Image 1: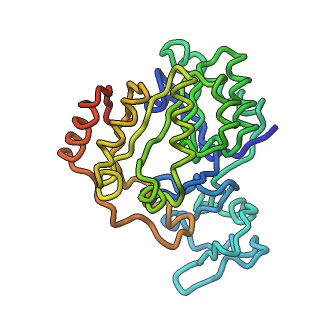
Image 2: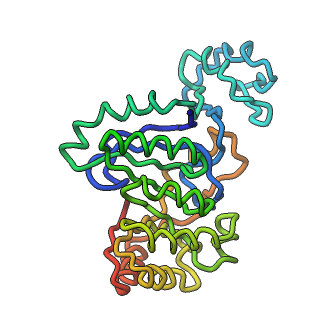
Image 3: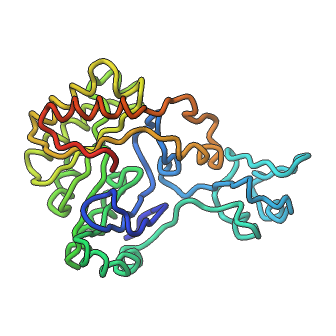
Length: 299
């Protein structure tokens, strides 16, 4: 049993209680206009090019068998459409300007990485969080990891956008101590516009999970002009109050991930989206608190 991950974050304090090891799995069914982790979207490993590290030495060029690297007047251009992420140029690069984002790991291999942090879990009441991307896009691997971690006595959490088959949630729910569930937009038409997909399955899964699972914490991204319009903040509060949700993380949009788009060869990046002001955040937080939610700003 193997899965594809792109990051292991240790000593995380934003992905559940205590100090946590967060495993980021590749692949996501949504294309949120504000995505700060574009490296999570594709399910397979990808090439990332850090131009600022490039020595313009040309050692990468002979290693590419797919014609994806071209010499230019000021350096070397990568055609990401031709790149197959084989890693040959990465192995040849002396400066780390080229890297593969994503690696295939086995259950036992990943458990060994996690177990290095058990002492921190024990001291802080922490554990393991599986995030993404969308971890439920790799359901068999996620189920195997949750089963293995619980057998080891580790607290487990799943950070999900909620878009998955109901049967997948039914299999995974008993294995996770906590769900961190993203709720972005209530209106289906607007949800399609800002994420590229309907929210019907997402909201159905949320309702089922709140009815069947004892621990659900909702995360709401605050993106000016996208998730705070049309009464969406109020509608989020109404829905969560009706479902008995108590805890909510209000996540203000930030631009920390913009540089990743160019490194991964994306044609466009969400450079024009505004960052919410302190007043915007306070206003949204108060609206949600008025529905009886315990709101924490930040993850």
